[in-house]
Length: 220
Image (cartoon, rainbow, N blue to C red):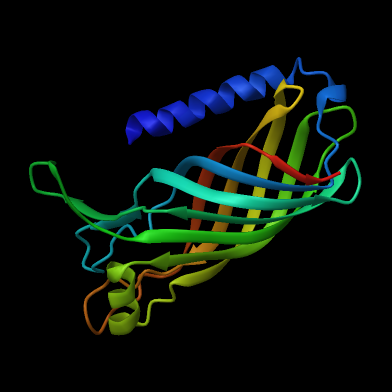
């Protein structure tokens, strides 16, 4: 899994580098595109730093994982477009703490995360770059989150703001790669504390997805 994620980042770096020397004339002038993609999911923030609310600093966080999804894009003009995006990742939840010797102990449980959003794309003239601005939801699923919802009332669906950047690199006149790096920013309270004192307090989450996709032109 780690090798796969490193591979995604390496491919993304190569495409970003190639975009600097790719002539703008090679950009596909598509109006409507479907882009399936694979990538990596990186949660940068802990859900809670003292999940049991007892001063023992039990930490809860999602783990990095592979991501899969697709995008449907419509370009109103060469510079402005709209995109519907969906991504799925089988990200596990990990709860960990350091014992008296400083050794970190941890357990993990299966879960998954679904990210769905709509966004505006802005592509500056004479470039292959585009900037991403949008809003959507982050939904957590699997038994661990269903149990948290049923027992503690954890809100497993959160509204999120989306910011990111993407680039299109034409490998051949008929084949291109789209690479994107985007952050999903939202507030979340896992409510993993003990019964009677469940709230951990909402914290800002920053979940990043780095993805490589192949755009399929549906219309021009």
